[in-house]
Length: 463
Image (cartoon, rainbow, N blue to C red; front, side):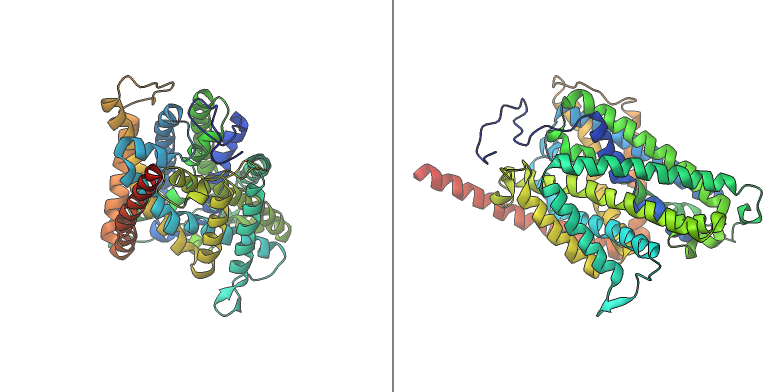
């Protein structure tokens, strides 16, 4: 398909629509279930050492994710275009805000996501073969980081060669990861009545602010749930989008929420909360405690496959943001070209691979996860706020689906976002300042790109 070829799509989309409901739902489920639920419980346990609060954090995270998905379902059906949140922000708040979202995705969010997911996949793959992935082999760079870079490149090649190939990997890996989570639930239930199943008593936390600790713990929880918005990025490649997208958002987010709660209960049945902070690869530790070394190999292999699927899902969705920016003239025009043989945004995929490999070489998992959550959530909140803005400004616009529970459901999401971000500003101001600096640095870049586009249009008119 030529870059300048006219589009017969109702919404002006140039990428071919090849994804049905099953693949769209798999994008959401597969992009969400990955490194988070298999690794972050240890981080959450470091910040919350009261059992009921630990479980409450996962329940609240699920409710917030479903609320966000129900809200974005309205926006996706209204604007089924490639780019998802970028498109919603552009229509509700204008190109400058949309550009800042894409700019932050480019420099921080998407590379951090690739890195955190790929490192977890790599850690579990090394564990399958009984090798310590944390050993440095090239200066400070570890085995896990090297393999993670290779994995980023592999999913890039798969998605460059067609979204149907990426969708096939996503569908298969989603089935495998759901199976892995269900197996962990069964292992947890099998441990009932054994000494290991006793839940430890909470430590003394009188000196801590329980509310503040809960807010800080929500950062890794929401990292685990992140992915509930990702199907929106491939909206321009979904068949019958106004019917399929709302269903994919709701079903996908609900399935993830139920699975996560069941798995966290299973973890608690096997590994006491007081022991979780030292359990960096908790899924494999649960299998080891219940059925021994064979269980470690099986679960580690299943987790590695599932996180590979999550990395694939992120590579399916992330490059579409840069593609949409380029179509608007706010990024290199070459990235708006559709690869003629495979019908993919090939240049944007190559850029994403390069960024992911760079980030995975220099950052740790915890740094990558925290930086991603705090960087993305202001934009998630603005996306939800877009529903309020557009309903007021464009009351007669076509809305095949309207957010269930409006305005309470999107209001719940916005309240959670304010609490999360406000608490993090107080507890981790340095990280927030770094993200703000990156964000604000995008303003002069936006004006440069805008001026450049205006100059190119003027030059074309003179000719």
